[in-house]
Length: 217
Image (cartoon, rainbow, N blue to C red; front, side):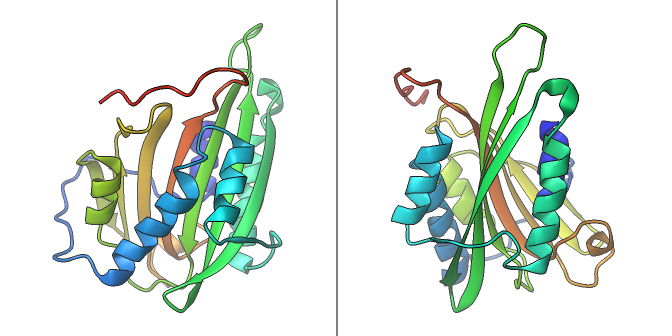
């Protein structure tokens, strides 16, 4: 279910094909990743804390249908996440803000599912930053600097490029980080309901009353 939900949110599947990074990050590349860091890192251990962090970072809550491509993504994501066999629940909040003179969208989502009978629900909090007007990929170097890990896999084909980083050791309970770009009119754009850039990761929600874990590096 987790993998299907990620794909529905517009993350292109990855493979371990090496692709060189772009030459030099632009000011926008850095600003995009800084915006993701400010909104997604501080509160990543819980859904409510993530929502609070988004507001503190200057984001404003908006309607789910604020952008047609985003609305299509959210619809697919919710359908993929709500697996009845896993007693799944799903909730999300959508935010908007201009960055570099262009509208950007932030999605904070919480998915809960019972993976095996009799076990406690597995709960994840996802944070996704979109520029649905982007016409070029983001240089991955600022993401590498944020995560503290080298790129572990890259795929470039059909007018799309994607990178994945392993779990960031400064951020316990957070999984892989994904950066994807899909060009408008591309082969991949015909198979996923969005074009532009998305940067995202998901974190295993910290149970209530449990102390925040220390970084493991």
